[in-house]
Length: 172
Length: 265
Picture 1 (cartoon, one colour):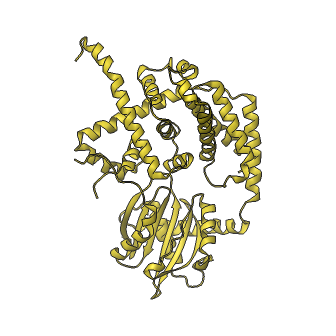
Picture 2 (spheres, rainbow over the protein chains, first blue to last red; picture 1 turned 60 degrees about the vertical axis):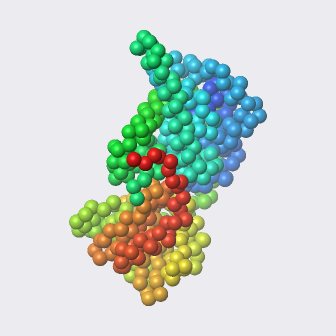
C-alpha cells in the first residue's frame, strides 16, 4: 500500500469519524475539534499503530478516549441534554418522524450504550473492533449492545403511544 | 444445543450470521412471540438510526482536517515501510498459492457434499503437508511465540499457536500458506505414535463463534469452527470423537461469549 492509497483510505475513515463525532457531540464546531484532535493524536502515535490491524478501529479508539475525557472535564453531555442542540436538531428537520424519534430515543440512553449502538448499527464496525474501541471484553460489549437496544426499544414503544391515542381519537 | 445466546441474537439483528446460523435463530423465534416482536422491533430501530445518521452530514472537511489526514498518511506509510516483512517470505507464500489452491480445487470437485471453501483449502493443505517428514514446516515447534507473532503480523489478527502437551500431542511446527481465502496459518502436530494432525487458521469477515462441526473428506476427519475473528480447521485421520475432543481442547479458551437471557419457548 502506498501513500496515495493510504490517503484515500484515511479520507474514508475521516468521513466516518466526522459523522460519528457529530452524533456524539451534537455540535458542529465541537465535532470538528474532536476529529482534528483525534488526527493530531494519531500523528503523534503513528509508530504505535500495528500494521495489519484495523486502522479505523484504532482511530475510533483514540476519538473515544478523547471524547470521554472531554465529557468528564466539561460535562458537555449534561449541558447538552435539554433539547437537541443545533447540529442534530437542524439535520433532523429533514427526517421522517420515526427516524427523528429513534435519534431522540438514542439521546436518552447512557453514553456507553449509545456509543455501542452507533458503532455497530451505523458504522458497521465489527463487534470485536468496537469492544476494543471501548476497551472492554467482547462479552461485556455484547451485553452493553443488547441492553442498549432493549432500552432503545422501550423508549421507542413509549414514544409511539401518544400518536396511537391521537389516531383513535380517545385515550385507552 | 438449542438456546440462542445474547451475542447471537445481536448478530442476527445486525444481519451478521451465516445463513445456517440465522435459520437456527429464526426457527427459535418462530415459536416465541415476545422474542420475535423484540427482535423485529430492534431491527426496525436499527434501520431508522441508519437513516437518521446518513442525514447527519458534517459537510466538506475544512482544510485543516485535510492537512492532518495527509500528514497522518505520510507517518503511517513510513512506519509501515520500516516493518515490511522479508521479501523471501512473501515470495514463498505466493508460490504456495498455486499449490494449495490447486489441491483445494481438486478436493472440492470430488466432494459429494459441498463444504465451505476454507475447509476444503485446509483439507488440501493437510494432504500436501501433514505427511512430509522433512519439509512439513517452515518454523519449528520450539519457536511458538515467534511463530504466533509471525502469523499475527501476516494475518492481521492475533493468532494463537495452541499447545496440546496436556493431551500428549506435540507441535511439530508451522508454515504460512497463501490460499484463495487469503493467508492461512498452518500448524502440524504429532502424537506419541507419529500420527500427524494439522490445524489451519484464518481471519474471517463474518461474526463468528460457531461450535465445532466434524465432517469426513477422503478419509480425513475435518473439525471446523470459528471464534469472533478466526476460523479453524483441524484435520487428521482419526475418529470423530478424537477430533471433537481435540477441537474442544483448542477452542475452549477462546469461547467466552456470555449465555443469553432470551426467554426460552
